[in-house]
Every structure is written in structure tokens, then in C-alpha cells.
Image (cartoon, rainbow, N blue to C red; front, side, top):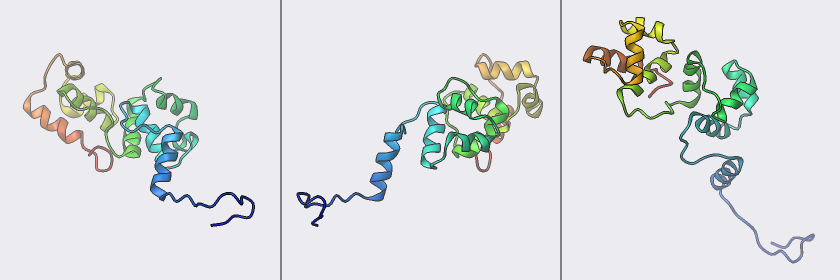
Length: 156
């Protein structure tokens, strides 16, 4: 196609919308294989084309606090995790050990150790040992933890 302002330019560049969006997301800092909570939060925010202020408002926190989460300078308080998991749509940490399952269940419930231990039916010192991996829960507790680690829209 001939362009009157650029008479020496006789070609058209065609790019699919998906390719352009992928290019723009990478340019903005999207990471292909996120490993940390902050990387997962940033990727999700970029995909949804939201600003940090928008996401922070959605979580009911300050933009500065959310920014620290994205930079992995600070971890969210456990009561903030259910909203984060609902925003992401998945649990962003590996589940390789029993202690990972215990922590996931507690984060999905958004409860501190004492309240979560009560819901599982153990004392909080035992729950702490489970989270640190120094003690393994019995079979009944594992079933309860697996049930608590599932939230309809947050923890698949």
C-alpha cells in the first residue's frame, strides 16, 4: 500500500492480536514461569490490565503494601490470602511436602495458627510442628487438611 507521507514505504506489517498482546505483556515485565507470589501477582495484574492501585483497592490494602508483595519484599498476612487466591485463581506455591499442604490449607482458610488448629482439632503447637515439617499429621488430620485446602474459586 502506498502512503503519501512515506513514499518509500511500500509494505504493511500484520500481527495477530494475541501476538501483540503477548509482546506487550513481556515488555511490561510479565514472567513466563513465575516462581514467587510477587511474580504471580504481577503476571495476573498485567493480564487483567490493572494498575497496582486497582488491585490494592480490591484487596483493601495500600498501594505501597501491594507493591511490596509484587517485589517479594513482604509476604501478605494470612487473613489476606483468601482474597489473593481468589484473584489469582490458583495456589502459587509448590505442594511437595506435608508441611506445604498444612500451610496451603491455613492460607486458604485465612486463619492464624491458633484458630486453624482449633478447626482441625489439635493444639496450635502441634500445628506449628506440622508446618515446620518436624511432625507428620495422622491420616484423619490429613483428610481434614485436604478438605480445608480446597476453596471453590481459589484453591483448585
